[in-house]
Length: 230
Image (cartoon, rainbow, N blue to C red; front, side):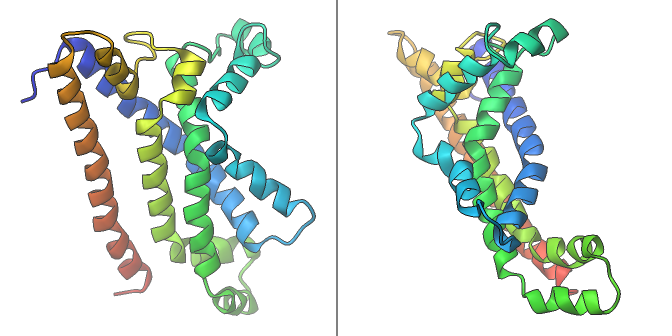
């Protein structure tokens, strides 16, 4: 058992909660956007692709600052949400939003490649048998792309778990509220006697990241085999 102060375990629990919420919220939208980019042919497709990947090329601090401008109490969206009790700035829900935005391009990229790898002739065959477009997508396209969806979800979770720049800019590092694992590691770096806690948190971060990859690698071939009817 790794000996860590209570605030370190709290940071781990918060990071897991933020990462799971960010991934769950991002995944349906990412699947939809990935399918549009993979199959759609429309004006503005290149612009949509650029916007989706913007968080990857912008410094994370810039993304966090943009979120702060939008969702602070004086921001255009924050001024609407705060009176409703749905404020995001300096709250764990804001950390989940920032993590979701930063991981979104990775999820979309993996799922888009999976959709592009699906043979369109299989979809056409299902359509000729009378299946509606929704049923074709639900029973043919999505199951065949399932391993890519899993890979995208894993990448999104890992990115959300390790997100630091956008999160600390948007929601700061408030113990028990917004101090995620990366923020806690940074906090331990700032104190002279933080070495033991720092090493423990780094070890936990590595274990969680490797565990996510191993689970994904274990599930992917089983999903592919089930889709193939083996």
